[in-house]
Amino acid sequence: QVQLVESGGGLVQAGGSLRLSCAASGRVFSSHRMAWFRQAPGKEREFVAHIMWNGGTPYYTADVKGRFTISRDNAKNTVYLQMNSLKPEDTAVYYCAATDLNTGIASWGQGTQVTVSS
Image 1 (cartoon, helix red, strand yellow):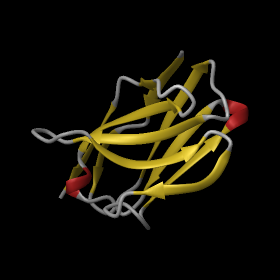
Image 2 (tube, rainbow, N blue to C red; image 1 turned 180 degrees about the vertical axis):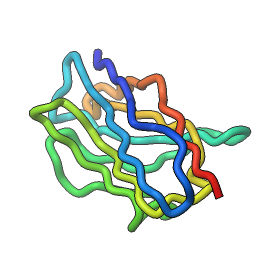
Image 3 (cartoon, rainbow, N blue to C red; image 1 turned 180 degrees about the horizontal axis):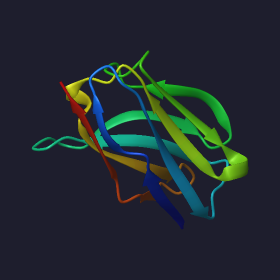
Image 4 (cartoon, rainbow, N blue to C red; image 1 turned 90 degrees about the horizontal axis):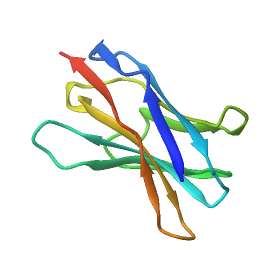
């Protein structure tokens, strides 16, 4: 089982930047796909970006491509989401998830609030 703790959320003006961190502990393997999701008030949770724990090409939803960057630091067991050119519609609780592609088992963090003011 993987434990995930997100941090780095906060209040920022439109056009600003934030970097979210997701610290992973427990049994993290190269078969884990690390992802960020978000959930805005009154909306369903949606996919933002993912990257394999052992690297590879990241993948982004169209809404954030070119503005957000997902990366990982295996030495620190941490996944990051660098968010630039933030928009009010990026306001949401952001969740980190680790999915073991061998078993299908997913672990989730508790979420971190990101609020973008106009």
